[in-house]
Amino acid sequence: MAISFSDLHTEAGLKALEEFLSGKTYISGDQISKDDVRVFAAVAKPGDGFPNVCRWYESVSGILALRFPGKALGVKVGSQAAVPTPAPPAEASKEAADDDDLDLFGDETEEEKKAAEEREAAVKASSKKKESGKSSVLLDVKPWDDETDMKKLEEAVRSLEMPGLLWGASKLVAVGYGIKKLQIMMTIVDDLVSVDSLIEEELTVEPRNEYIQSCDIVAFNKI
Image: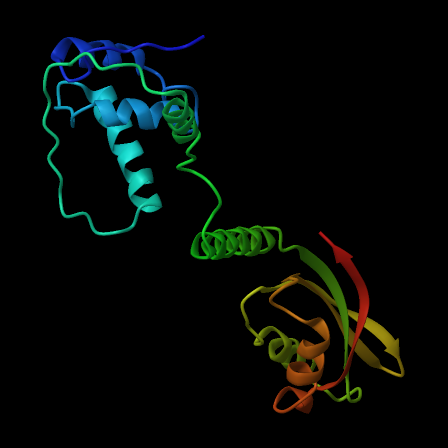
């Protein structure tokens, strides 16, 4: 059903539009359409007494500004009483009809497509970051021999700190011949911590290899 407005340059016309836009984003729905462009062209910039019209006017104005980025010099259009004119010829009527089909929101420019792709990539990257999982890992940490100070060995392990790493419970487990190994839990953020790198580049190199002979992954579970 067609929507009709009249005298939008008057206070009465703006009042009718103000009431119509109450609870609405645009003239014909939640997205801008040609209806908004036609009404926008007929409305002078409203005052603060019409908050719904002001909100709608600024929204449409901002979208149109993006579609027509050229610098405006300013144009004044006068008004005069309507003067009866003869009916236009058929060819002129056809041209007018074609003008009505002008799509102000047609194909995107290359710059707009590139900006849209960048926004989509940023959203995907943000989503991937939010979805980063965690894992629970149980390590066996073995000393060099039965004379290794296991308390200092555990202190050496726990002294390793990095983003995404949290050490948990631990216990000593007998291996044999008086030797004990340290079993210790840790929780990691998968995207931040590599267990293999942690073992090869941190736990089994100086200075921690003074106490640690080797490390093995006993259990690795996603949380």
